[in-house]
Image 1 (cartoon, rainbow, N blue to C red):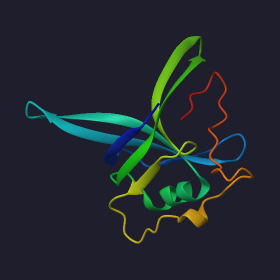
Image 2: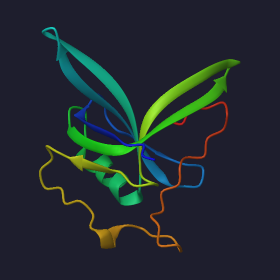
Image 3: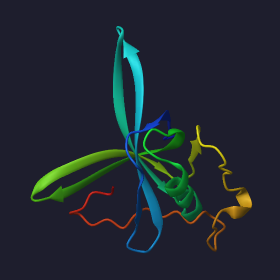
Amino acid sequence: MMNVAILVGRLGKEPEIKQTKGGKSYANLSVATSKKIRGKEVVQWHNVCVFGERIVAAIGEYLHKGSMVAVRGEITYSRWKSGGEQKFSVSILVGGNGGEIRFLNVDNYQPPTAGDVDKNDDGMEEMAGPDVDDDTPPF
């Protein structure tokens, strides 16, 4: 089976760089895509969560509101309760099971090579999801 989303769009706000309870860095991005329907531009907003120490550091340094990115990741769904109310969100996860993000209009950026990626004992990329309790949203 396959769960893949591919987006090309612009950041609608500055990236939010955060850390999990375990100290791993991740970045939350708000990516806008658009298309014309009957001559009118329709914009859709997508939540993107990126894991990986080096790529998150590069996101913090090189990406800003208006930056164009290409994203390939996994669609994830989250539910939690806040104040007795059920909350729901959809996001694109980049990391863990693969995925990638490319900076499309950034000068002087060199993406990490395969040798630069942090590995754990199993040889897999160290990209666990954030530690989230039931009362807080994942991004």
